[in-house]
Length: 322
Image (cartoon, rainbow, N blue to C red; front, side, top):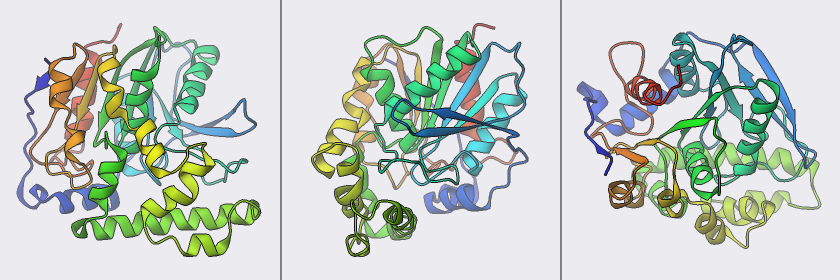
């Protein structure tokens, strides 16, 4: 049922998906910064770092932000969304995945697109320490897949979770990786590969018995990284097993939380499965919006706020308690 018409219209050169994606990711400046870091100790001996802006113990509503592959809490798209919601009265918690806060995590494992146990730990922390009555989730790209999987795999969702928004989300991890490997995405895949290999090289110095420098050097694709490290370090048989078990596409029909998925039709990272029209038509809770333009998290507008930030606020306010 909830197939939504979009109001977003890109202008000029921003109709080009590569221009909008690259500009938003590398050239955008956001006048916002976090001022507090909370470290959560996890049950497996590891930790997560959360970035927070100014927040009040009297506030009863919070936004949790989840970043994308090789990202962190301080990327422009995270800061832009944090600024939007803090200005409108929400506390904001920006989640750094394991090893993404500038300090390597303690374990050989790190993060992946289906690591919902870490999101659960953050929600539990906020419920216990801050007693928020209203929790809302916003995820970008890989973080969007993670939150959609979380919402669809749980038998019960905490009653405090009122709504969620996923932006530029690869709903089928394996198929989207195939898109990234195409020639028109060469610059993106090369950059991801460079950053991930750099991270693996650092990890190798701490765990030389688990992975070798030669194995890392021989990785020449994102698939190779997932075969060598992502799958094995997190308990999957191989990359294919990881993609199958962690892609949110299989969990979308089970979502019972009001959720908005915004995926641009010209997002070069996404495969056809990332536009789950039939699932949305048959769902009471999953709302799908597919603007013609926007690239990958590149919904640029002439005003300072981007379209997806305004749209997320509009959607989440519909389900707010106050």
